[in-house]
Image (cartoon, rainbow, N blue to C red):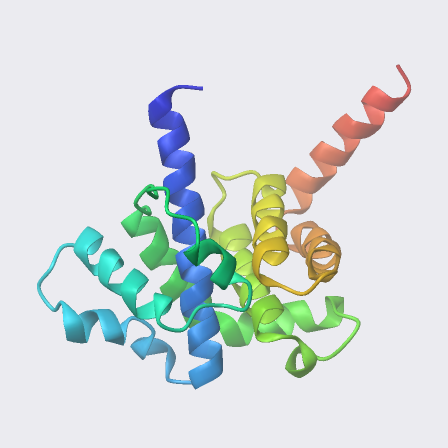
Amino acid sequence: MSRGGRREITARKRARELALQGIYQWLLHEFPPEEAREPIKLSLPDQPPQAQLLAIEEILASAPLENDAQDAKKTKPRTPPDAEFFAALLQGAVQEAPEARTIIEPLLTRAVAELSPVEHAILLLAFFELRHGIETPYRVIINEAIELAKKYGGSDGHRFINGVLDRLAGKLRPAEVATKRQQGSLGKGD
């Protein structure tokens, strides 16, 4: 993979991570969906998206997720997030949250209200990306969600996220999931 390709992947990972943090903050403070990026607008009304992202990183850093304290100790430079991808994920996941909850809840072993804010935010983020990020394979989206759950969630939260998203992918991307499962079963008998 070229350096540019790795940078792009890393930029998308950072965008997912920031979107997760934004959704998490939104869930905790319960402000209206249209205000999900309001802190950015207030602080940098006429700045380009990349400058706005740097501002939201500072805003979100003031209220880190549970396991983020370990990251604060690391000092290596980070790849800047993909600004457009971040904005689409954050705004889309927040705006589609009511519908996402309706679709996700039957796949859960408990009510949405009983989810930790981190699990809830990860599921909303992955729902939006599974539904609208058709260019990204569903397994990549699930794996990214699992990594976020391992980093920010409880000890076994990643297993829960994996199970729910595997079932959700079957609902949102049935043809892609069926093709992948068929390819997997063909390789087992060889």
